Length: 617
Image (cartoon, rainbow, N blue to C red; front, side, top):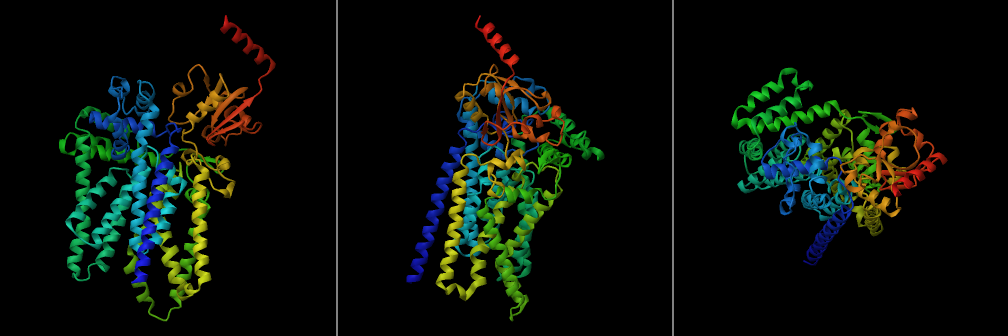
């Protein structure tokens, strides 16, 4: 009894630790967005979400499902917000999301910073909930809350999770809703009931409404169902298990997609049919998907009222597929291109904390040790393998999911940041947490009775946890630009990769403060992001600049994206080599904007003095 009570008290302490960390991370994440300007993708997402909720019209940003955008727009309903529905960007132009987003945030009398701050809170809440579910699920999977604690900490203390868990984008949305959907299905497989089944089907619908990569999780649900047929509810015969688990999978998928259609119907019913058909023609007509007349087929289907919401869903899906096939040019390891097979492997090595990677190393060595132990075991190898699958068949699905994402990442032409593999982080860290505790315990067995060895392992894990925690604190609030010490830290990240790994436009407010503090009245700016220079800097205080304008003098503020996108071109007139090869920045704004000061010539000084004299007159 004493041992049981001690265990219960220990587990309660772990629960308390998790809750304290969640509250702390909520505060940290919320505090880190105060001075962050809109990243590139937030501008269309927030105006799209608001338009769905207030206009029930899906003409803006159809290439992403609505749910995350709508959740982020919910706080805006409690504010006085002006929506520019009188503009051609809304009334006439086809999916003019960038213009409408810019007008909505910065040119309609709205408080952009306030709207962005509150719009990001729902994503932070989703991230916190996802971390909690990871803790619960890992603890249940491995029967040990210590495993849950490690998985939880690896996830919630990852700078990449924190970075993308604070923005109005769909990456963390699908990561969170996939965790909710898969965990609820796991609960159904363990203890079937109509209540859990309907919750699982609803969360599956939410997953599909979060991002178009959601179909990648369907094979995992199927694998989980297959595992349940083999290993769960042994009191049932196979016919009943197939009926409940495989039939349940099919029925849940049907219900989920019916709910997707209902959701799309609600938020498209005020969109004129001609607007939807214009979207179809403009978005698909020139893509290779139209070789089989897809645009015409979707247009014809849109004439059938009951199919209109599904046409809108398919339109978005094919827009994303076309975007992925055409790709984007980006900078990576000194090259400018579209595809590198090792992109995401390098991104993980450079952008995840070293402490997390040491947990990964522990997992690799533990798995090798367990495999060796299995090879030389006298007992039936088949029985050992069967016992493992019976306990951990869900992990097979996780492995397949991780490998599937990485395989697609190797072939993708949309390699714009580690955010594209963020949805698999949860499953990766569930495995790491479980193997780090249960796997090590199984491998060492009787050896763990040695107090020195046991205490050494505990101290090792504590050191890694503290290291991970301190890494997180030291990078605050610049989570997006985090790079680990393999390359000397975040200040060197721009030499290796950019885009949403580093520079998404988040530091414009910080640049504004730097300009004000240093009393700079004339600065040349080449900025990439979702902020508006007139709104933050003032149209009389800056000159819009570009790499093609050649060498200049005075103050310059250049986004690292702008520096590196043209770095492959050695011609100084068509790149920033004239700047980066000869000068060092006098300031780095969040490591994403470099500020330079180049002494003007004597003639330029005289001209400037004359200009000021005329201004005074």
